[in-house]
Image 1 (cartoon, rainbow, N blue to C red):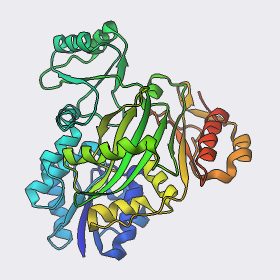
Image 2: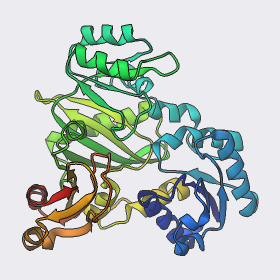
Image 3: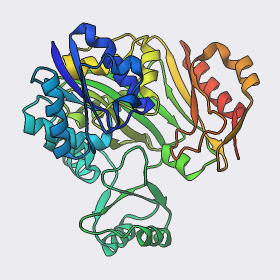
Image 4: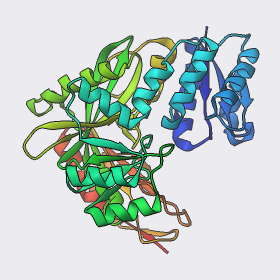
Length: 409
């Protein structure tokens, strides 16, 4: 029996998908403990009644509290924890530090920093010969302005430990950079990361690493780039997993992606690596995260392979096991973003979309009247399509975002 503690700071829907998968794998030899900021009653009863341990803490991101919480869960599990896991990117360094203090196998703090500190990450990638954006970690306004003048515009500015596009902005010139720096002045203890703006097509290279061996690779296409979506509230966003990702257009990333993971020290897990293909055909790595991919990609991987990738992640990080599936379908997600501010008032175009595309729909989470506006580029809801023909899915996604309109009021 493998004793696994899953750190779930908050019982959010996206995290609960992984928790459900962990609960379902108790029959495969997993005893499951949960550490959370939330009270047990925030978890669905059908889940919490199957937990083998539960410990509440005030702040799971604090390594001291996390260690105490894991010790409490360990006492309920018979005194032993074999694996300590969690999916949130801001949690990874705290998990690694707790593992170190408690002697639990898994990613070390030094490796977690490679993935979490984006400036440090790019230094490592560049030293390893991985093509990536020019960057500078600026602790003063003068440093930031100097880098902008030397590098040229546009630039991307963001916190060095950002995730999912949060607090990430594109600045077109020195005046816009100065405005950003006035609102968030960099300091030695709170620097700002400036990067060359990479233009072109953006993708995610999603892979499985097991014991240092890269055993599975996938590619997801973003349309348009997430940063462009954040800058333009009217744009809808799609992600597509083509059925065949073995063509020459992906040959370079199939070489660069695993090498980047080796440079950063990835040993075991599912990792999303975001990369660009420039207009001249060259590629550049944007960043890598040491956690499962977001933006519905974990679901899409499952639909494309007729496999449960939520359970796959649990098996990988808890049982050191992964069965490589056959890719049988193309799959894609259309994000539904409300137009305007306020709350969801109505969804227009559902009837026409159902008539045209109903046979392709495999999952949908439609915005609900009264739902508040999301601050994410993923919007207020999504629809997932699947079909053996990649172009059918690509066309279907384009039609969805042209037909459906989420009205805010």
